[in-house]
Image (tube, rainbow, N blue to C red; front, side):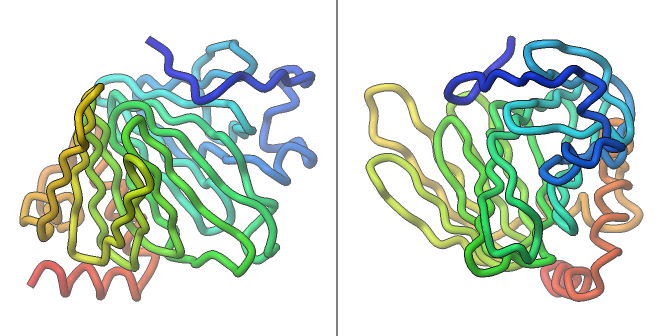
Length: 238
């Protein structure tokens, strides 16, 4: 079942115009950097197998099947590692890191995504993640977001994330913490906060399981590309 955020934006370009080789598309495109298994993309209501180098524009989405994963470069130095059975939609893309203009906003309807925005976000830019139960504003960090039914769980490994839910309630979540927000129709949201557990950190540790489709290996490769982030996660493991 497909979930769409707000409404579809008509796109006049054909599918070939969405390849990473198209200069105009690449200016504001999230590029499929890597993938494994059953990964599909939807552009202008057309679904097809995703491939390395595919550029996703506003209103496009990508979905992973069982034992599958994908990695998107949302902007220069900003990545999303998408676990199995997950669907994420690109709502809006900033002009580029350091441009000082625009918002990168994605909608996660189900599944789990690890976000690496540790490259930072310039003044005047913003990075947001929306789920069925909450909204997240990011200022340069490494975190994961998991959606399961009416629950969304945010886990922060580096930096800080501002979480909003319900009628304007806000929580600042710092590194080493996680928050779960459960929202059922007609009820007050239930919020649970705690420190990251060994289980939360395990996917980032060498020698542990590789995860569905080998996604944790890809995730660890992502972490190791950033020395400061690697040191911070090692401190969380102590």
